[in-house]
Image (cartoon, rainbow, N blue to C red; front, side, top):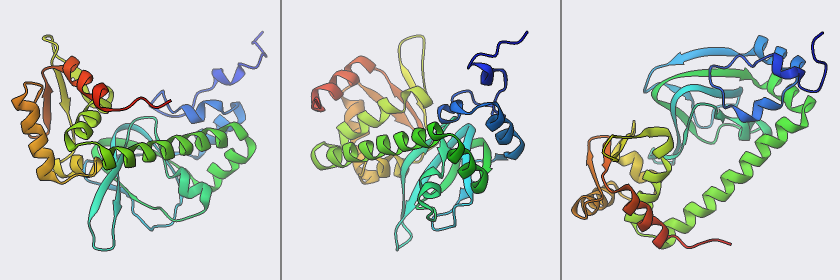
Length: 245
């Protein structure tokens, strides 16, 4: 006979290609069934827009594969990348929960497969499963903490330190180590996008790259970056970022 313990939901899986959409792992079998019959999957090419700033939030978007840049635009039409979305990330949950329009746009920077869940179904699932809503609340709080850290870094740290920090953060998602220990980062982002993510001008980022090259730490060619002295880069970051208790 099948096991009727509390682990039954593990016998039914979410209709997602990615295996790390952690907020959704709390769904029970009936909720998984509702999710699977309600989602729509679509392939996006690099450069396509998923949703636009100030548009009504019609639902949630779960990244199954690829890479998405979340952009914020000012009144003069200038845009900055405020964060990146990776496989397993859910986009649109903050405006959905707040019943607001999208506060930013989402643009595909690497061919992606995106899962869409209508707002009505998303709210129904959140209402029936408090753990799902709590998961999104925890992610929101974490994002606010990251914003505070970013403000601190922009206020007190040099462009070089901010750039080093960003490169290390991107290591897991966009990097690989060569046989000689060199970290190779293949970033589907422009130099301007990198600059906007650390609150700097593109020319300042270019100067920081030249400094890293001069010191024998890293080299850049287009959107590919070779970190030749990874351990020294880590040491430089740790020596410049204060320990927060």
